[in-house]
Length: 265
Image 1: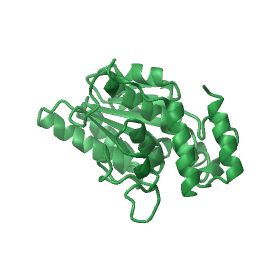
Image 2: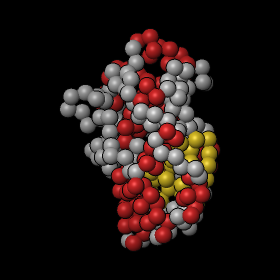
Image 3: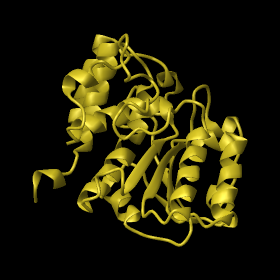
């Protein structure tokens, strides 16, 4: 297996997330840890098929506030340097809380929830109309189900049978200020999307092998992958703790978090 086929190690990405967040004194750590395995599984899927290029695939991080996980994956892919990664949240850096199109593999400025899904769907439709064989992957937070645009776009994609659209739902069941169920209740997400014309799968969002496996399937319809995840996964004091949507770590918390990630090997 050549160097370009070597898979990313999710534990390395998680350790980078912790280090960069600590050194920048920034939050959104729990949100980033929630999607690390999803991103690693997706990028590893591209690598295993020799399609780690944007002519074959695109990724839209609709859950823009978790961009640190994305940046750390780019570092592990040798697409950005360590020095560049460590400019995260520094003055004049393009590596901010939300992704910027000047960053490799970023084609949408995330931040306004639900809009990334709409953007990617538009690109997927355009590619189908122009007979381009490119797949469009979207990382969607479950809080974005609160946005009306999400359901409008899901309806359009299902009606038009946009089969080159794959949405991975980060189903960690919480958002900035409360549990998702306490904001708006959705009784049956899989059935709702199926009624709109989607194929639906449900997986363990922290199993990168399972993620890669489900991504190898192809359908004649858009595909929703419900990835059941844990906010702050792997860190005892962050796990399912809403406060860590925004909190930064102090030195003691950072050291404890790194030690806990190390025990996952």
